[in-house]
Image (cartoon, rainbow, N blue to C red):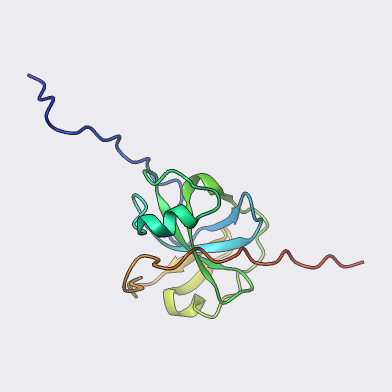
Length: 136
C-alpha cells in the first residue's frame, strides 16, 4: 500500500565527476580541480539564493580548487564539464589534498586528508575569476 502521508523526494543524480578530475565551469570558463563533492547542495538557502545561476539543489555539488587562483568554489554538477586540455592545475592547496598526478589520465591522486571546511559555504558566492588575458 502507498502511504500518501510520507513526502516524496526525487533521488539526487549520480555524480559525474570525482575527486582528482579536472573540470571547466560552463558559464564562467575557469578550470579547476575537484577536491570533494556533496550528493546534494549543503549550502544554506540564503547562499543558494544569492547564486546567480540558481542551479537545482538536488544534484551533486562539487568543491573545486580554481586553477591559478587561491579560490575554492562550490559548483553544481550541471555547471561543469570535463577539461581535456591536459594543462596542470596551479593552486596553493593542491599539495595538501593531492599526492601526485597521473599524466595518462590527467587525474590528480587524492590523498587521505579530509575535506572539511568546517561548514558548507555560508557567504554569498564569490564573483567568478577574471578571464585570462589574451596575448596579442
